Length: 570
Image 1 (cartoon, rainbow, N blue to C red):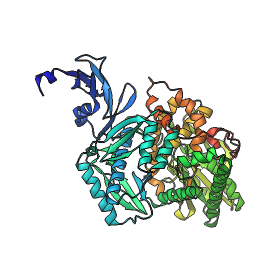
Image 2 (image 1 turned 90 degrees about the vertical axis):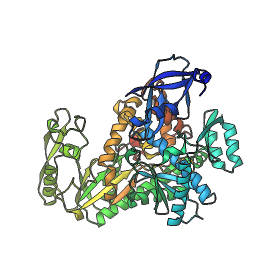
Image 3 (image 1 turned 120 degrees about the horizontal axis):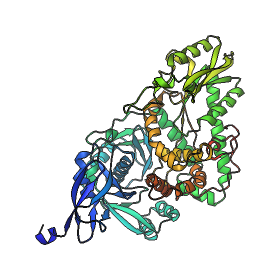
Image 4 (image 1 turned 60 degrees about the horizontal axis):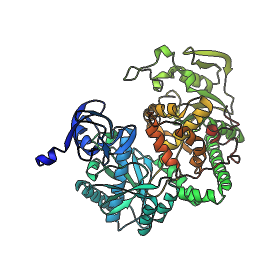
């Protein structure tokens, strides 16, 4: 670099929250490139740096940020995000999906590709019918992906008027993507160009393919699973453990939704605009009722005595359990309910996590010996004392009531550990029936933009917390990472233990939740820590046409547990 150009560089101190280093900015343009900052700090991070937060706004590493208000020696406070964070991993997997789509274009003669849903820590992808997924096909795609990554191609973000972006997509006959942008509120749209292929993604993107070296591709069912770094740590690749039961419910749900003529958000919006939503709501409710009846019949036929239900947050467990009890009565089976919460040990004995905090989601918080003893007594025809955990005193108390099982009665146990074999270690497996309640997003934005199930659950919880628990959206967002961490440890590893998996979501649900969630998200100011997540969710909601009239939704619908008006949830 010449002396003249060197004089135009300005030293800026940059802090990533852990350490401060000097990075050279451009004195003439008064900007600094985030890639340069990431390169200066990359050795401090376990994962791959993919994005950043500056002045409470999310940025791609390809962005330049302004330093016009800073002088030499001033300090910029930037939060760099790597793949060990949820947001950082999202960006990585989105970039990996982009490379996968490009590789399929090259290796499979432009075959249409569908980015479907998460599974086993990866992303399940399928192809149009003409592609038979063989080991040879998978290896061919994987080889081309490696070539693209090794070449370290730049991924160019191009900001253009939304109308022009639609025109570009129509040129390459990707009409659904172009039509979806009709629902985008922003006048400008960022599209991405890599290896001569353009695409639009809901969310942010990595700046180059060379960052995506930690990946694998595995054949699974009729498609493939795209796998990223293990626990987000660079240099390590995740292990694929097939989840056949969960995959089946995903595939069955998506197939049924497609049969109803709703393949994606565009189809949903058009159905709403045509005034077809009432019939759709009634059809979905009938479908869920049929599934509940089928599960209840199976329980009665197998003569199960203990039904264990586990579900992640905001799955509608309370409504589901009530409706299951009603359906069981149709087949001559009554039930009593036990909550694992009532078997908590005294609070003073609560186990601690690695940070020394009380771990209220650990299995060890439950008095397993007492629970198994009570279940054994009930199954033996004995009476037990009903107990309740007093959350004010932190101790178990007797209610004064006795519980016993009649010949036609079963025990229903609810709790996050419901699928863990250790929960009912003393009970014979043939007496148990395990149910996993999930919230599976049935539609995606388009072929390449999936809607994570966690986003739907977060929207549900946000609306419910505000309406019934007195929490605003800030508090719900703030707690969400901790909630998900507990689910990753205590629920998701045991999904395949379930005898049945029930999907409690509805294909039209986000269009209903939007009316309630958007004002809560809009209330979060730009200077608040939760703004980044609120803005991301708001960008998702913009693609959905709002369903204003919810009167046709049944008062016993699981959805009523979140939006109000339920006759079965207090």
